Length: 95
Image (cartoon, rainbow, N blue to C red):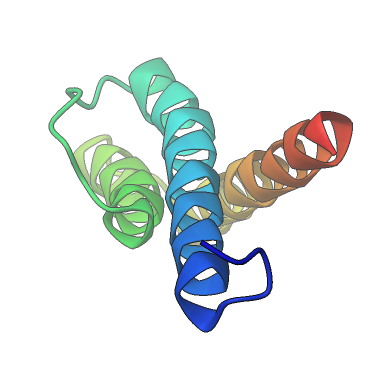
């Protein structure tokens, strides 16, 4: 197969996309394990949403104030940003 062939380029892009998704899922899963969510095979988007929703539900269950709930939301957002940042760093290190 020619290295410049569109089929080869598409295959390489699919492999790269799969690797990025796996690394991102790994990073997001780390954040979720810290708050007690199982390792069910969620998509990266579902993992991010579960981080936010679970933390908010925990705060509501503990009857927290709106300020405390906003702090939880900020923490979830920070964890998700860190997961994406870590993913970018890992991929940059891999070349």
